[in-house]
Length: 293
Length: 277
Image 1 (tube, rainbow over the protein chains, first blue to last red):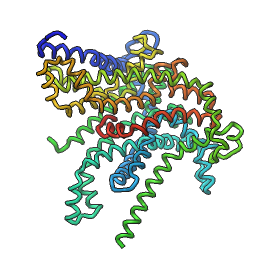
Image 2 (image 1 turned 45 degrees about the vertical axis):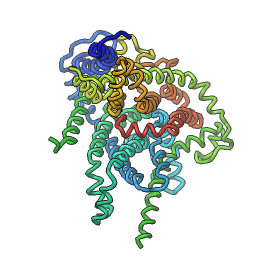
Image 3 (image 1 turned 120 degrees about the vertical axis):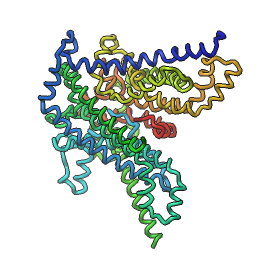
């Protein structure tokens, strides 16, 4: 290569290496976000030209109670996410001990996370089937036939059934994160506590919990964001049914845009969701960094 | 007494783990035992019965022929190979520049990546869709590839974290021997980032393989179907025949399971170092 000085090389390399990635970042991350805000003040059907609409979309959104009632469906996913975190922490603590075969259990419990989500969704569609589904047939066989239900067809159950698929799929991933946090707690602290006469509950309460508090909080915030963005399973399995009972905020946004071609209104819904998510993230950074200033 | 207590605690621990394993394995187990049943056999037997013949691959043949899964695997492979290669290349380049040099805009660029990670992709789709259409990329492989490469910034974090552990003395001694910076990137940095690259390749491959929404939205043509979208189409057309659907589901599930069982070490290290958020 040319004998350029390191100063010149550095300049050339920095801009040559950053040019493409930064262009992609601006084009596919920042521009759409900016355009989303702009679109939320316009009327657009996806084909003809966009027309300025001022605050119309937001006014329509605020006057439509149904849109925000849908957020109560997202609560099922929040509950599922919290239970998932509790289970994940529980199993992480078990597997952090000196149990025989713990590696096999770790590999097994993480398995659902790497499974294709469409295939997973249909797998549960089969499990939940009213007539041929294993769950109802199993309940029937063990004499619990009063529990037999239309898991995806009952308005009061459908969101919990869908949220359970997410729990099933993501528990192991949370567990691995907790396990990583637990393993970073130095073991001599536990030994010192033991010598001082601490029992296992005390060492959990006063050593484990404070050391992994941040990871727990982080996971809970991610769970909140995940619940707000819940979308995939109702989109694939129920299309929001029965009678809109399993719509989530995102399935509703997606329908408004891509089925009803009302991109302006959908953009205003996306903006509202984006702002809620950013608010959650902001409070997360406040909570996580408290007492550090 | 103390010993009894210890043994019973162990017993409860194993009971919990076995119960969780049962919950995890039960749905795939039901898929496996029903995928090998013929239509008549499926109608006559219970879903909990084993098939008469575990070598009855008829359903799998139907899935490949009718569902066009061969092409779906090919399309998915194209998306994975191109996107992952670009991710590795661009990711290591950014990590080299941001990890090794000080310059004026560095803080701003790092901040831009942190902020980009916070933007939830799903909420921005409404606008991204308009962009892809106006660029003329709708219904082409370029749309998902550009989105996988440009809008997902996971690789930057992984590499930046890793490059800190590559000693700077290596760069310095290469400079003393007169190597150019490009050579240092190619011959020192890139090879030494290999463990991070392994993690990235596996996690990205799994996430693209498992993604449904990007191809669903941006490449809806039947001949551009990926494994996820082709499975959706196949289920839509054959919704009643569960034994055949079990075979379809299994075919889609198996590749990532195999990948995982062989390479779990890299996946776990990637997740604990914060690559998946």
